[in-house]
Length: 640
Image 1 (spheres, rainbow, N blue to C red):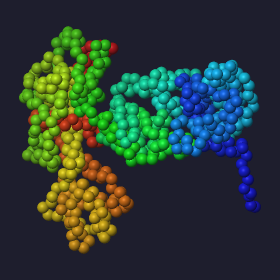
Image 2: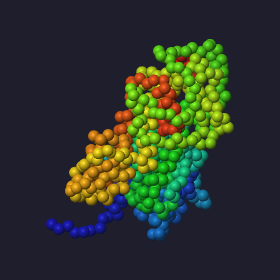
Image 3: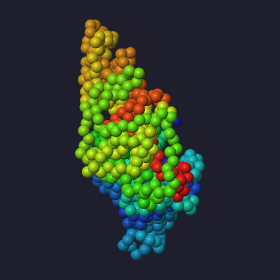
């Protein structure tokens, strides 16, 4: 039997539309919060019960809804936010489709109380399942309060797909978190089962909003600020690496023109900017506000408005990656706040090492901490002898058993320290604990800050005394980082190739021969010099200097295969992987005994080159314990 094409009823249309907008309580609450923000609210309260399934309410102090428009507010595709097609090209409001209230009301029981600032009294509307049952005057404050009960009461199948109330409450908490971080200028309060979960101050400061979510102490300790602009993109926010790394991308939070969204492009950019600072398998955390022209981003992609399209994707991605990377590379390995930091006391603040500021406040004398004389708790079995070495000093790579560790690394010209940069010096007297930390100021750059080499433990970790810190360096991770940076610099300076005395001959197909000709410049950047050699063969006359000859053929074949597979298939990631493998292979290993000179040389290079404070895999190079923390562990002073 043939079925006729007939129009859907208004009730069916409303329920279908609700399925696009209202997937769960959190989605409905998101729509209501966005309406409140568009109405100019500065205070918003969200209250839920049973995860929002049986009850939720969103109250604001915004502009309210005029009594003449209250009925129209619950009609589908009715809005005051846009009126022309041209406005779709530059949407400046969070909501614009005019479906939120209609969709929510279609699958629940809604009560709306609202009052404009100029009205004498407010108005109360009741809507059940998409049908308005009452409109009457009401005494209420300025703004709007929308109460929703029994979500999906008339669509039981959809109700069955909801999770447990506790799980749904978690989704709502995430929605409120995004709102708090998107609008630090608005005071939010989130209440679940009668308990206040979040309460933001609304003082306009992003860090205050972040403290509400993550806690002040943790957020300050684990994140770094990101500020800058590039390619028409203005970025403001924070990024967390190292111990802040997470097992998934849930802590990568992006906001464009005040709108929370998810974007694989932005995630890729941040992960590129934090490469080697987060352990493999982990992801950075970030709270980043991006500001750009409204017409350069399309938010009208999906009804949930969580996805966007950029008109110039490549420029946005490269700009964000560069700005994040710059925010993390302004300090060297000995100047990271997570490496060198005093515990907070009334008369002390955390150390923040910088080339343009004093790194320590005045430190109390030892007698103020404990009148007892200091006790040396650890004496190396073979103490190293002292000598004074001032960096930077050109040195040959250290070696073992006659083999030069870094003989495969091309020489990199020494770079003079910028004006005002600090110098370091190993202590003159290994038995002298010193008279206290040395602050290095820009006008005292000729007075090196002292490092005291204590020795090595487990033939793996180099121990140093630096200011009032016991510093421990992973010798393998440190050497691996130095190797990796040198090799990458060689590539960037187009010094990647190493001539072979006898060319390597490789067989290729006609298609592969054409691919090699088309990508000759790329191959040369990688360090390969390839020429035709007879029929179906090529001669490889230079290879990447990081590769031994047995590795070259396999690496070359991988490149050819990827280039042959699809245009631009090889994105230089193979280059980085090969460099990383070589850097690790040629680095001194944990458990390998180093001489005193080897240890000194390794530490000097870390300081001179201002290296990233992690190995290329993201593991930390340096950890430290403060004098105060050690005193507390030995009960020389009592914990606060």
